[in-house]
Image 1: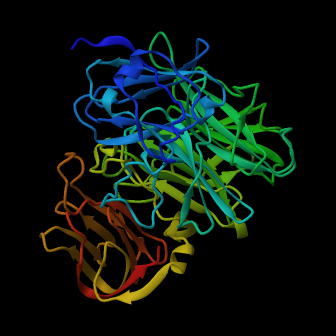
Image 2: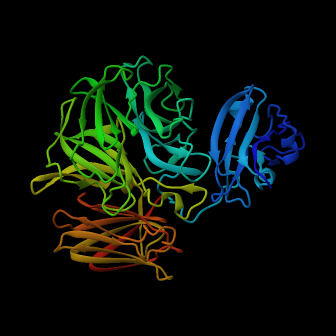
Image 3: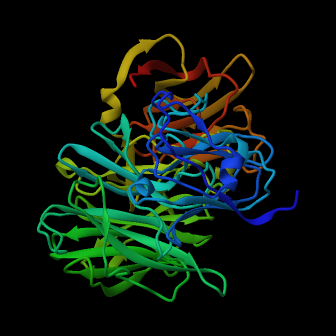
Amino acid sequence: MRPISVFILAFFLAFMPQAKECEAQTVTPQACEQSIVTPATTGRYLWLPIQESAPEGKVLVIAEGKTLMEQNIRMAREGVDYYVALDLQPYQRKGEFKVCVQNVPAGSICFSKLIQNDDDNYALKEEKYRPSYHHTPQRGWMNDPNGMFYKDGVWHLFYQYNPYGSMWGNMHWGHSTSQDLIHWKHEAVALAPDAWGTIFSGSCVVDHQGSAGFGKDAVIAMYTTSRPTPFGGDVQAQCIAFSKNDGKTFQKYEGNPVLTSDVPDFRDPKAFWNEEAKVWNLILAAGQEMRIYSSKDLKTWRYESTFGQEYGNHGGVWECPDLFKIDSKWVLLCNINPGGPFGGSATQYFVGDFDGKKFTCESMPKVTKWLDYGKDHYATVSFYNAPDNRRVALAWMSNWQYANNVPTKQFRSANSIPRGLGLFTHGEETYVSVVPSKEMLAVRGQKLKKPTEACEIVVDVKGSTDITLSNTKGEQVTMRYDAQKQTFTMDRNKSGDVSFSEAFPCVTTAPTYGSIRQLRIFIDRCSIEAFDSEGKVAMTNLVFPSEPYDMVKVKGGKATIFEINH
């Protein structure tokens, strides 16, 4: 059937006394053709059927001739992979509205599969690769962690989020909260696209003194908006929003944007209060460099300096910066894509000094330091306002080479376990140490006789050590600590399903910066994270075994297995 340019999905949202609360109401094509919508008294959500192989169509919500929402969605044409929710509640409060679909053939299966009900768990299926103790979105796509802060005993994690499918697009800020960095509660979407564009990465601060004019202890989000231009490419600008209820809801600043540029890649602002300089500082990515600004009120920003020319790796675009002090030195995190040590995306960093205006790297320009030597560790940023002067970081566990294609459906991507950052020296260089956050010890359970799909393996090593994880299907991951070469290696070539990308099978190798005595290895269904207990090695790799690894063989060391209480 020939596609039509606009197909109106209008539906009656009338109360049905005989229907139970949350009972699904099918929206028929005939109802759509009548182009009539009344305010709903049943059915908060319109469940949209998704087919990932389908081209993107558009779904719009229109009221009084105005488009209130417009998203690119892969509406099902021949079959349904999963469902996503269009929350009707904001529009029901405003009166009559209609939901429209563009660029989808009129005979597509989606028009007979639309469901309306109140159940936010509708059609949510258990997936074997969903991690048990790592943060994941309930549905949809997730990438960069955003706006992370700690306040009044609660850790807040925002993240790049597509509520309308498990592939990148329609960028919002999702939101989750936790009291222990392990168990997460899904909150309402924090920031949605507007006239300035989709919502890209950014940061949050707690404005204790109320310097921005939104009240003391207001939470201020600073984020990038991105919108296409008629001439191709995107325009990216920096905006702010404020929250007076600890990040539960945000109101966008009427004076947005607060910072613009003519550079096409101009994004990912990380703001922080600099107690030494008594100013707000901001670092953001601009092409293959980082720009630094200062402000008194988080609204008016003064350009101070640029860092990056000739320093570190320049194999791709620089993104998602962070700048913070550990002990007496400053660390600048710089995520890069591509250019990682084993292809695709990764996190590099620089150690030096910062005076509130200029960052000075203490290493020679060509020195490159990687925060994690795995294939699946990107967009690393730290929490603002963490207690006890801790520097706690999270990463996105995937790689842009294949992130859209990993073998999950309803959701895609997880965050790393929380990590504590510090410093150590080796030779004449200072490096950032990475260890599992202390919260991971709090969920360590009883000892086990063999590995499970969610466990921690502690390996005490005595010289060179070989570790093999395997299952009855012959799938395996091998790890080796080479004491002579001072390297740690992980091989996932035979780890399970590696067919979805030629870039996925690989061997990753990290320097150990001297000898190591103990390894901590965290397994969680689709991921393996390995750490030297002193923080000199961190390696994160995804795996997709057909069944859990339930055997471990260690040569040259002793393994102790612990369950994870989740």
